[in-house]
Amino acid sequence: MSTWIVLAATLLWAGTTLLLAELRWFSRRPLAARIGPYLPGGMGRSPRVGLLSVASFREAVGPLARSLGSQFSRLFGVSEDLDRRLRRVHADLDVTAFRVRQIGWALAGLGAGTLAAVALRPPPAITVLFTLGGMLLAFLLLEQQVTSASDRWKRAVHLELPIIAEQIGMLLAAGYSLNGALDRVARRGRGAVATDLRGVLSRIRQGVDETTALQEWAALADVDAVERLVSVLALNRQASDLGRLIGAEARVMRQEVQRELVETLERRGQQVWIPVTVATLLPGVIFIAIPFYAALSGFIG
Picture (tube, rainbow, N blue to C red):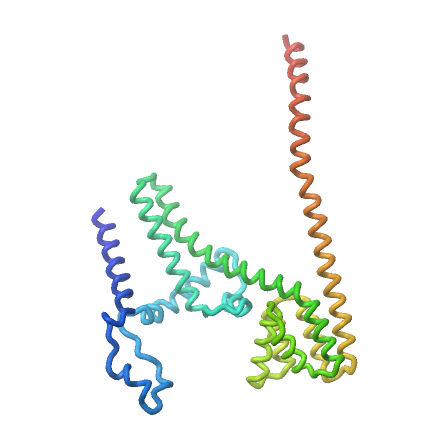
């Protein structure tokens, strides 16, 4: 018991130190850090990080958390890179910040499982299940959230793309350039594809070629329809009837979405019959079993 008390006191001291380091009335910034932004050239200087602070703790454990998090993800079958999934959903966190948060949640789950094991005093196997299970559950919960967000984003792009492709085709047929058509669709849209197109335009403003920026989007989106649309848009400087080609590709996309919808409806229609079949077979089996058992008992007697 004394070991657990020492461990709890150590964790409490570390957490209290990190919390108080973020409060201005407790951790006063040095004079050089306070007047630095007002000096010539001081706006670009990075603020000094204290020895015991959340920022210093993040910088210290960031590489380790990133390495451990990637290894655990591959161990549980997550093959896609985390950075790619975060950039796909336009998350505010980078890989290091997410892995630090994930390791923090895992340690919190380990602490909660340990406290539950100490309070309930279960058998050793259940104790190990509480401690390791809480840690793995917290870790995999955040991993599953990112994966689910990535899948939802890909699904939204797949569903929105036929309409966006038709809009781009009409704008090109009306005389817009490719860059102008993409800019108009990105400014007027609020969906997943419009958000991705704003990222494409940002890359173009940085000096990247239009085709290269679109290919980067196709590689990041990981949607077959996006790759086909980008391959058509890459013919901007070669084909004169690009609007007609994009319109034909949009019709193909719409047919794919319609076919998937029909498949989903058929699958759900088949699933409706599962409880009906079970509810029908169970009374039938009972009605057949009763006379069969009576006949068998008479034959044996």
